[in-house]
Amino acid sequence: MVDHLVSIENLVQDDIDILFYRVQDIKHGLNKFKNHLHDKILANLFYEPSTRTSSSFAAAMYRLGGNVISINDVNYSSVSKGENLEDTIRTMGCYSDIIVLRSRTSGDAHIAASVSEVPIINAGDGTGEHPTQTLLDLYTIQENFGRIKDLTITFVGDIVNGRTVHSLSKVLKNCQVNYCDTYDLDKLPKSDVYYLTRVQKERGSKGSYQLTKEHVEQMPEDCIVMHPFPRNNEIPKWFDDDPRAKYFEQMKNGIYMRMAILMSYK
Image (cartoon, rainbow, N blue to C red; front, side, top):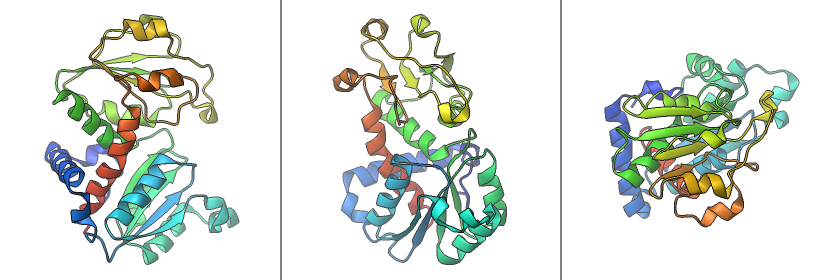
């Protein structure tokens, strides 16, 4: 695997296959890997809020026997005093073996990788990419269908600002991909996977949408519904118990996939 993971395009299919096999091993024997990174330190450096990505990377590192430096709010670091990204990355590289970076601006992960002496893992750079989310999403699809090739996948919601959509669409070259903005829910095409995203108002997006029982009734019985979370109102809570709802399954796969990724840096 490459030193830095700033884009899903850093990986070839063989890399993805290895990660999938590794996730399977982890899921069948979690304790087997409890000392795999016992001498490593991960730095979680987050310029934007996060619940799932920051927590799952920390949990993954602890599960592998490593330690974590968590800066989940850079406003309490020297960034609040004007320190630039490059200096922050160089500093954190002095104290850690891997840096997980969440940033506000597309391209920041590439800048970080250009100056870092330790591996950079992009945990989301503005509206750019979110490659580790893509990997756990792909694994969830594979786990449910036994394949990814030739599936029909419909993205719903904030297509313009959704970095998870941008990353995932790059690796769906052998699938039929549809895009459905928030105003076209009544025109949902028949799909194997419905991938919903929230409207990102913090990036200037407007509007809202919500799945209704009428929309759900139009969906095939054997489809799956995914969402990278957080959600606002787009998926009502009553849908959570529907067997087609796979977003909490995505979250569980998140720690396994991030363990698999971190194991590449032993």
